[in-house]
Image (tube, rainbow, N blue to C red; front, side, top):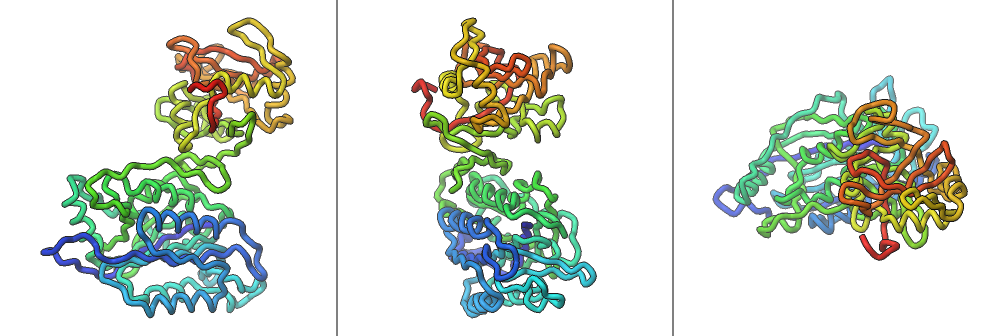
Length: 467
């Protein structure tokens, strides 16, 4: 899947001698296709569109219609209906297409594939050309239109992928300046695109779509206004690399997502990420983590890989190790990384780890110099590939001095896997649970909080009733 967002923002001039707050409504029309007559069915377009629609309704006051599994005729009928509507001068319309896309290299044409698109269509008569789509939407008499296409090759909507352009920054001096920013943004005609790539094929589940949801869930920050420029900051780490630019007769117009609370006089808080329907926690970079329940707690089954500046590292400073083993964190960094997953997510306590270890056999308690149960059995069950589906990966450790090699710096990647708990042992140390390949045991340990160790997170009440 691939996202393209194109701004068609057309000539609205707000009077300067009246209150510049908008009186108009915002609309959204989403086309999402999972089921095809001949093309391979998709799993995620409808659910992703519905999640974005829910955020627009709840937080931004959009009137949203989501239409599912539409044929070509149905798509153009809906667009005709919206062309026949009457819009106010400061009203906005966001149109989204989500499903399959197609591109013909020799004619340099891109297409949207409707539900009834033929898989074997050498002349593309059953497809919707981007050029026709552009004209059909451009003629809708709404002053400000944002078009999104979530489909393979959607960057080919524009004939030339331009370099990133700056929309500028708004004043940050209070509500009056923000009112003026809204007025200026909706004053002039504009043509702008924002794309997650060019002519690439991309997966069914779109990281670009995930980042758009994360941007919407900031509520526009303290001023309650989310701009395309701000959305771009959420796309910086998406692959393929996002690009942006202008097309047509662009005069500097913008498209704004303005929260319901704008103008209330209170700051709009940046929320934590909402839990998804699949219960998979997602970090602010859009990475989703698998989960499994043990003893009433939901545990992540992957090592965290969310960067905490100054408190997390890739082993040996190699990004490839982050991809495979996750990051190593200081104790404080690990707590922050778990909290970033959203409401209720936290670092496991010492008792949480003990309970998990006992469920699968036991552990070697180094601080108390005793063996509880069968540490070898627990090690085998909880290691990646084991019967417990916990999938521990041995991400090594970064010692407090930060040096490399031997018993200092980074050591034991693939052989040694310590994980933090939230429970302090003494003021500068904390307990944890570790995997030692040389002994084949699961063990409980205490270590300096400034060390870098792997991180798993849990959701649910602590096993000992304490944080």
